[in-house]
Image (cartoon, helix red, strand yellow):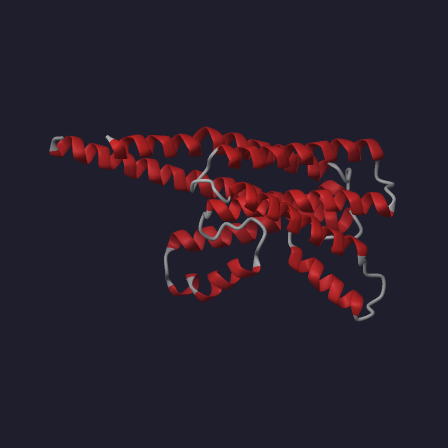
Length: 246
């Protein structure tokens, strides 16, 4: 291989890697936005249950055990169990998988998106006047999907893009980014915090129209991320692999 051809191949691989990283960050940002949406649905529409950020449920349960008035117990407990189960199932499914986006990643994200879509349609049918049991059931299924999503995002390992955890992102932002460790990480960390914040705002506003509307948008975004990831991220992996072999 000539020097010119080698440089061209190296440049192509570099661009492919950069595109792969940018698309990966964008997809994780979109899923972080979904977390904000569904947490607004859970807390404001499903009896104060966090369906994405489990730290909130732990805090609520702690205060409820201490005797704080009118705090839910059953919903947060079941959401915690469901989230853990979803993450466990995804972890088992991905245990023997290669790194990066692959068919199992697509399957898990697509399944989660379709479940959210089915839940949104069911909520439209049931209406705003749901019983406590129905609220707990809806919150549990959403939490299961979010646990699945969080486990897949963790397996994809896009730096500082966990989709559900803001505390660690803020910690990284304050302890590292403020002191000049790189503008890329700064932008990514700030973006993650702002994205989940905006998702929660929009989710709360959509609840004024209907409790299922935010969930419907979350389902559409999740399915969109699934398509983009399958179409572009797995493609990049195949391209880089073939070029490395060449």
